[in-house]
Length: 109
Ligand SMILES: Cc1cc2nc3c(=O)[nH]c(=O)nc-3n(C[C@H](O)[C@H](O)[C@H](O)COP(=O)(O)OP(=O)(O)OC[C@H]3O[C@@H](n4cnc5c(N)ncnc54)[C@H](O)[C@@H]3O)c2cc1C
Image: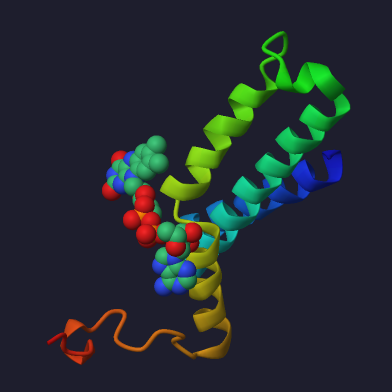
């Protein structure tokens, strides 16, 4: 857990440095959001597991963190959509044609 948290902190530190230098691009933001929300959810799941049955009771607040993070996973841009953004930046291939161009959408009868 400490290794993943430290790696996540280094990732956002580097994105912050790129932003300060005026070099940040949207795929850098996607990578940071996608990785760090995933990492936080994994840490919450591991914490729940460590607590055993107490992890699903309300004696400990870990489920509250998990539910909060599940909403963050959607409203910060979903994991899959960030993956598409990263894939396009890496390969130059837009997976879904017409995504940003409504005129090329198939016509509906
Ligand atoms: C608590 C909360 C607060 C929010 N606050 C705000 C706010 O303040 N402002 C705001 O603008 N919005 C807000 N939202 C909306 C949020 O940003 C959207 O819910 C989010 O962008 C996902 O859109 P959607 O719900 O329409 O899901 P959809 O886009 O329908 O996605 C459903 C599923 O399909 C997947 N999917 C979608 N498109 C593709 C694709 N092309 N290829 C592969 N998979 C795909 C997604 O990854 C997801 O798993 C909030 C949402 C929540 C839950």
